[in-house]
Length: 557
Image (tube, rainbow, N blue to C red; front, side, top):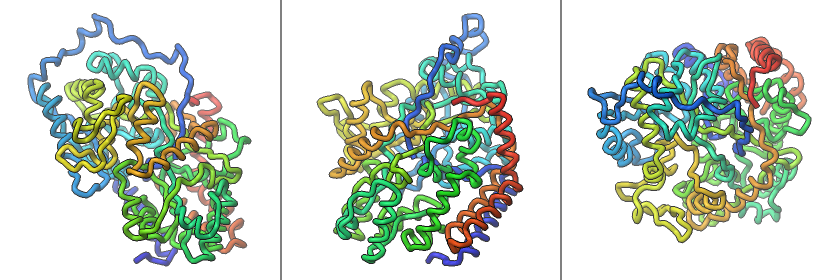
């Protein structure tokens, strides 16, 4: 049963956060499911191109392991543990296939290390502190990857070494590594390829509830709140809600065209909520309105992860739920099991924003951000680069993404692999189509043309019979493409973020819960008090350090 005491909840959250920071050092919880989506279009110039691979003289400095390592080498590869029932994330058909096809061939032990998707930052920080982190240290968001670097967890990279051992991988990613992989003048990060799509992130809305109250699909925040008021009056339920504890993008629906690139550079940060920024104030005001008018889950402040929000939706308590959809999701089936007459639609993009424009987090032109553990040996690095190169070969990547032809998938007349979502044999893919294994080299499945990629996703993102959800999401993404905001990337570590992010995250959670539930007449005064406390707790130092980097031009758009 949910605890209805906000004060008890906030106290517990603060104690947990302080305890975690004492054990693992600085760093905040960060989950990507925000990942809310968009396209990444940072323009590349000739100067951004990486240097050509090493010449013959330089190549002589590297040992040729193409016939295998003379002594066994172990590399540890992180893999997200998403708690899929019946799925062993570190030992399954595909990890065994990887060991057989790559590991045994080169005398490499490929050992997978489970990382909790919802406890990712805590898991990594604890392992970094204990010296037990895997060979790759990775994250979806640059600010947190920089935090890991700030903990001294990553070693600098020799790009010629990558080019020597991983020519295919490096050929795909050389320009991206050259442009985005440096920090403080050293080569630190390498990346997965990304051709971004934005129609795999959807918000489901109960269409039967809309029909029951005679409401059209809402197109902006005012209309969405009006729909919620009708749901309340009819006794149907509320909008879903949550307490943001990481991957902070909740303020995006309150953007407008008055904000500059410097504003975004100063305030956007997936690890630290921009409490003092006007869009965040407007977010909190709307949250307060929704709570006090009974339009939102009355215990929204207890929902801090996807599982809690999903549970409310499938139980029929709330009428909206946002998530990354895939063909094997059980969300809709679970909803129907509890509510057999339920119907779902894709909430129109921009329905949660003030003016109906869907401002969203626009992905940079890379996927996973990775560094090499500072403890990794030269042999482990060589084995790691060889592993990435092996996975980059089209046949190997295709197998990891699709499985066994005739079992996991069939190929249609256009050469697109169509997943058999009912297949339950030995080679069954994980519920996110094995992405946690191939995300090291590619963020999404790509075909040679945009239409081919769309056709693949149309067939493989939606459960059977729900293709219209992807069609609507695709149209919404296309219509709103101009409103994507790319977070500027600093080329120096923001040290104040490493120092204060954990404390600020705890204070943000207290402020958000209080401001979202207080008497509306108290909101403005409370907001000013929390802003001052936030600034005094380290946020002013973060803003000042960022401003100094902005002034000297140490950031990339």
